[in-house]
Every structure is written in structure tokens, then in C-alpha cells.
Length: 613
Image (tube, rainbow, N blue to C red; front, side):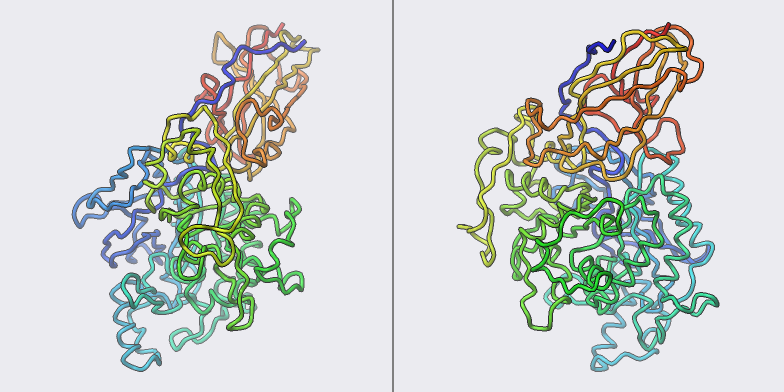
């Protein structure tokens, strides 16, 4: 007989680190390195031990750059937009404990179009301008990498970074690019522009062929060959990869501002190569334009942004379902091209239509498509004050997108931190901009309301939004067998879980039931067939406990023989929820947002107690 368990079923309004979701540290903006100031500081992948490199960085003293490795998951304040060099100071007073490490790998050493220093890019730019825009091979000499295969040392650098993540407590957001530090882009000032396309598939006087010349692989481009080389590493560390940002094109690997980043054929080849290289269990991030370019080539369609509403939610297990979205100017708002978050939401729209044609961008349509994908949504903070970044619009926006990951060290989080989470503010109706609306109200779009959750009353908007990123699971009820025979009995567990986050659990998890002796350290485990990916948040964003229609029932009946020989005694019953390929016994477990249920030593959630006879 099952009996109700005496547990705290209320949500604890605190930061709950969990794999594959939440705030991540990223890199601090505009750090000075010996290669030049960079706003990203992706780790530079060297050819050999003596090649100039760094593994990510942050200023630790004036002019002194300290290393930031993949296991850099220490608690950190959200950034308030004010640079307080030499040390990073968040400035908001709101701390997050990241569980996702950002691993940006800069492959500039392996492209003859990629500048190795900021000074080299600027010098090239000056010479190119003086020559009337006509590049010569001499202009590149000594300033760029060299197109060719990734060396075994380079692959070991990538492998080592992922191993550090596995040895820690987190998972990894992985990105590869050929200009991870933006040396091919002149940023800031009225003459901001692309200096040069960094990809090894960009044909130039210094890179005369995009085709790999390695015997047996001459049918591949250099990007395809590099991803083929990386594939075994990505499969080896599948268990700790949250998702892979497909990058590769343009400065910072942000898929804009280079000729190839505006070429639909380049996206088709790139995304096909990523689908082949990255384990099928892991999402791939691109922008809407890149996805449509791939979809058109794959299915013989001619879709543009006008057709996004016609795309249904993808069928699980299909290539279409693997694509998530990266948002490089999250909630930045209006600019001269409209409500596109500085082009982040409209990226790639122009390449799908004839030159000079209206690309058909509509913000509401794009955000709805992103939400239907049901995958990882990763953002770099923009957060310029506007209707989509201020509460309550920010809550509705995150719920519609399914916002999963945000860089806590990029952007101005005062927009959220200065707002107090109150019923009057959160429940107020807000009218969103419609097509053609300018920066200032009145707006002509939909009028929406967020749902106020009293659990967070009086806290900051930043605390609420921090905790709702991705999934957030709350145990709402639990029943467990009161007693069971060790040899002939069946342990029964049942209950309800509510997902109060902005998104679902994207990556598959294995759920095991653990038995832990109350009077000792003895533990036993048995698998279940529960699929936590079905535990989705309410479609209307109502995460209140009284919304029982959004609770998800779970139940399992496990023969005691599945646990092995369990001695008589009293046992805590726990759910261990972790990646099916997790290599440790207690790391990277999914934690419920309840008080008193988490058993850190087991990486599991206590759901009750049973007597074994």
C-alpha cells in the first residue's frame, strides 16, 4: 500500500543549479590579452605546445590576464553594465551558481583568413583600404593562421577542456569558430565594419581553395573536415555537452557579417556537417535564417521568414527537432531595422529573398517559431530597457521563447534587478509592438499578461528570471509503499511534479530509484522508464502551485529483486535523474526546487521512506 509522504511540497525561491540550464559565466567583455583587446576571449586552440594561445581569460590585475577554464563554475554576480576593471564585479548583488560552462574554441590557427591578433587585423584593414579594396597575398603574410587539418595537439586541447568539465559538476555549451575573439571585425565607432571573412572556406588570395586536400577527404570542405576530426571528441564527451552552437561563420562564430554568413548554401553544408559530427542526442544552435536555409535545401522548399508560422513543432527524433536558437542580443529591443534585437532575431532573413525585397521579418512570428522548436535557447545579454526587457514583458518573452541559458557577464541586468516582483507590476497588461511600430509607444501588437506567483513576492525581477531559466521542477506530491518484502515485494512510487521554468528538459535523462539505508551508507539502485522530457511548463506560464492542471503525474512499480539483495531495514527512497551516459554516481543530477529533499552526496531527490522486510 502506498502512503503519502511527509515532505515540503512548496517551491523554495532560491537559485537551484541544474545541468543544461541557467546562467553561465561566459567571458568578461573587453579583456586585454597579448593578442589585443577582445570582447569575447574564446580559448585559442594552439597548433602545438609552443604556439601562442590562451584558454579563456579575465583580468585579475591591471594588465594581468588570468586563465578561465571549462570548470570555472564558481558563484558569480550578474553584470550591471558597468566595467570596473581590473576585476570583474557584477554590481547587481544577485548571484548565480552556474552549472553550464561556456567552451568557445577559436580555431584561428587553422584558417589562412583568420587574423591572429587585433593589430594584424587593423593593419590589414588599413592596407586593404589604401589599395582600393583589392587584397593581395602579401597583405596576409604573418598575420593569419594557416588552413590545414587540426593537429593532434589541438584536438587534445579540446578534449582536455571537456575532461575538466566532466571532472567538475557542470555541463558544457560548446562553440567552434575561426574568429572567436572578433579580430576580423572593427567594432565600435561610426566606421564599424567587417575587416575580413575568417573562414577557411572563404576563397581569397591567401586561401585559394575551400576544399580539403587530405587524401581520402577531398570531397569535403575544410570546415566539414575539421568537424569530421572533432566528431570523435564530441562523441567521447556526449555526457557533459549541453548543446553545440554551430558558429563557424563570421566574427565570433555568430553567423553574421561575412560573405559566407550571408550565403544559404554555406548554412546547408555547415548544418549538415554538424548533424553528422555531433551526437544525435545533443541540440545544435543556429539562427532562424540558417535553419530555413538548411530546411529549404533539405526539403526542396523556398521558405522565408513569412512562412515561419506554417512550420509546425518538429517531430521528436528528427533532424529538425535538433535545432535550437542562439540569441546574441537578448531583449535588446528596437534598432533601425525594427524590433529585431539589433538583428539577432532577424539574422539571415535577407539571404532568403531577392536583393532589395522585404524579408518579411516579424518578431512575434520568430519568437513563436523558436518556442515551438522546444529546444535550447541561449542568449547573450542585451537588455536595453524596452517593453521586451522590462517586467512584465520580459517574463512573457522568456516563456514564449523557452529561454534556457543566459550569459550572466554580458549585458545590463539592472533592467531586471531594479524591478521588484510584485503582483501589481507582474499582472499589469502590456501591449507589445506590432509590425511597423517604432521604438516608442503606443504599440499595436498583442496585449499580454504574465501570471504572478506569490512565492517570489517582494524579490527582484532578476531573482525570478534567474531561477526560471530552462526547466525548474517542483515535487508537488509523493506516495511510496509503506512496507515491502525484500524477495517477493514490489516497491511502488507515485506523485506529481510541476515544471515552473520557462522551458522543458531538452536532453534525455535516465531516472533511477535509489534506496539508502537510514541507519547506514548502504545504497541500492534500479532503473525506471520515466521520461522527464514530458514534464513541460504550463502553456500559459502559470507556475502557481494551485494550477494542478500543470502537474505531471509519475508512477513506477519496481520488483525488489531489481535492486539486488536488499537487507531488511528502513530506507530513504530517492530519484536520481541524470544523463543516461553520466560516468559518475552522483554528479550532474537534476535537483527539485523543494526544501529538504536534495541529497547532495547521491545527486538525488528524496521522495519518501519505506520499510523493507
